[in-house]
Amino acid sequence: MAKRILHVVSNVSHYAGSNKPTGLWLSELTHAYDVFADMGHEQTIMSPKGGVSPLEPRALKWPLLDASARAWRADPARMALLQSTASPDEIDPVNFDAIYLTGGHAVMWDFPDSEGLQRITRAIWERGGIVSSVCHGYCGLLNTRLSDGSLLVVGRKVTGFSWNEEVLAGVAGWMPYNAQAEMAQRGALYDKALLPFVSHVVVDGRLVTGQNPGSARATAKRVAALL
Image (cartoon, rainbow, N blue to C red; front, side):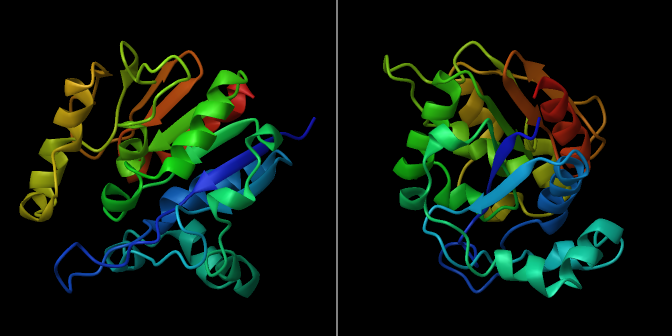
């Protein structure tokens, strides 16, 4: 039976207060989208404000622009999906079995405090659905509270882009906060791979998180298995 997955992407195009471009790390979307499409699942793309989701330029260069991302860029119909993403007000969480929060540094600015994203994530979780993220996508879980007021991540195992990876990527100085540390401060049980940039997925019940861009496909497969 086909399930319904809600992808979440960013609307942010630049690091705050600078002309340094950022946006969606395209392969983090395409790898998951491919996995779900192969299984016949229905997919919708949403962003905190709706409309255009810019692309992270660094992810569009070799070797990061792999076959999956290249195929997406070459398909006008799929590229159009990123020009007109749904807004939270257009989404009824009852219609979805899982939510998948993509990354790219852009999400560090518009995911954490998006009330619409929090509302939808909470509703999907409390209906017994799957909440998942990859890389910086876990920033969207930092402030998500359940109906009883508790943070969704408290006491739960999670992973996401590590501070060490930020340093090795040469962008630590541009970060508005240390996402790994913020997760730990909220009571989440953060976990990471022994080596940076290798695929790593953490599953805690219906919460599925991937550490970095190379974890997107594996994260989607774990979500698909739970579905």
